[in-house]
Length: 229
Ligand SMILES: O=C(CO)[C@H](O)[C@H](O)COP(=O)(O)O
Image (tube, rainbow, N blue to C red; front, side, top):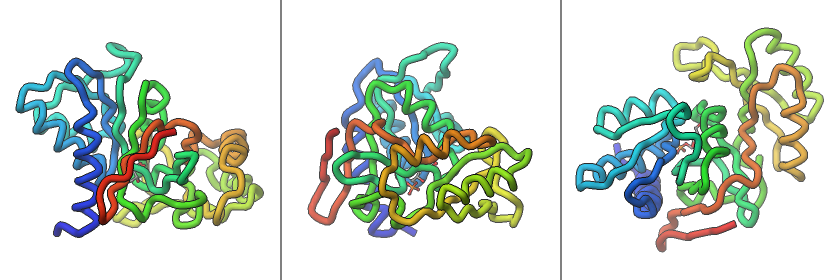
């Protein structure tokens, strides 16, 4: 079923797809909004655009491959011209992000870090005055000792919850790790919290993306709002 939110997500995705130029290496995000962008890229490639994509998840790789997008990896291309990805929250002003409710935060951060330009696409409810108020911060952790990692994260003020998959088993990332959804409430200093979480033994990566997004394209009822950092 297509919802109004889907229509807005598609609109934001199409605005980002229009920024892609011939010859680019394009980072392919993960999630329902990024999936609209991958569809848009597939359509443009069918019309003659020549690009290669670096996917941020097995899911996105599968979608891209099925649509005929050429994929590459970091053994072939170490630099990504432009990445189009979604987010769970975007801080108005700084464009700092919470990402990872879709479980792909580690690969998303690796691709974002290699990108000349990270363009975030979203519908309006994701644009917030401060991070952490509407979603937890996903933290990817290794399986071994995750219970002790959770305790150390709790000492930072979180209420960590082990993410479950639909089958009731612990959710596994593409890398085979676990995810602890850490409820902090509104975060006063996201950059400091990102450093603090990264310092916890057992943590692989955090869903706080600080200073990474160059542009956010936010679809609102009255059109696309473009925010640049
Ligand atoms: O970070 C992500 C996946 O790890 C997604 O970009 C984020 O969860 C947004 O997803 P959606 O577009 O489905 O709301």
